[in-house]
Length: 94
Figure: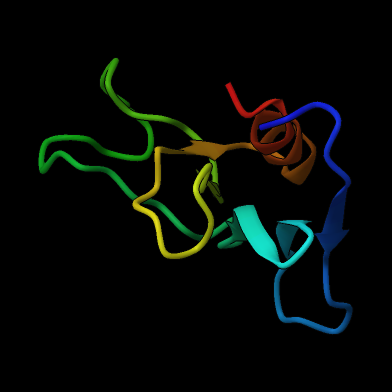
């Protein structure tokens, strides 16, 4: 993402869980959604919440970067433990 662009977070109040979209003008360049503390996901059948394998990303906050706007394929996504970590990763854009 261009460091000279004007980036603005759209984080609506009153949602059941925190969520937000990072906007660069009319384009969404990233978003996050907090699935809550009871959400456990793993891409592997053998992982358990108390025994994560090295490939798992612990956390409930799903973050996505869209460098080419919402119609482009996501360049990257991952999970974080906090909204602050997810926002920082999206804002870094690299």
